[in-house]
Image 1 (cartoon, chains in turn brown, yellow):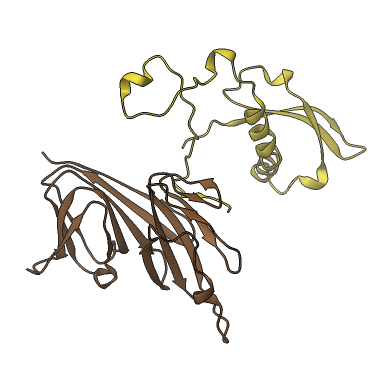
Image 2 (image 1 turned 30 degrees about the horizontal axis):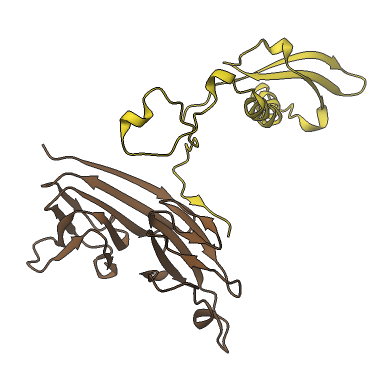
Length: 170
Length: 113
């Protein structure tokens, strides 16, 4: 029998959904529980799609996926290998942007988000998905998160780890 | 996480000054309630509208005291965590004492940068 460990962690702004399982595991989610808008694979491979849709995405370890179009949809995931997936979940109706921080990104660019003639109220967060990245010299571990605010500067050293950067569009 | 009950014991009641002296501890405390510090609580902080309300108001005062007692309890020298590098090899853990943060909330760990 294939198995999967599934757990959730929340802060007031967003949630993290973790799935760790064996090859062959099949997970289906219906619209009320499908809140994941971005996905990061720690390891493993699996197929992900809307139920009955022949077009699928192949989730692979080490990659980040924008799955906003599947929010509140009927979806299914089938593991082709043992897998470890981390989902970034919405908790409210705000829209989000998300990406991984690039290896060459030694400073976080918040100016381009906030420095406009018309003030914006977006809120930005970084989330550690893997390893021990250093931000302003502080070592993070998996599932640590921080709100980052402009005009404060943030020096980043991924240190072989993985950091997600998310903007809540307020 | 299920937390133990809180115990309280009224040591004296001062009708003139409208206050009482009370001791608190948790049900599974490592020593007797009489060995804990006593606190003076004014009637002003108590709710006498019903027996349940009175007990609830005493509990409200006692909760932070009991949590403080819990946090102040000494760590036995036998329970001092071992110094060693983290590993995914379970053999490295055999016989070692590892200290980890107790997180019963399921909340993400917020870091201030």
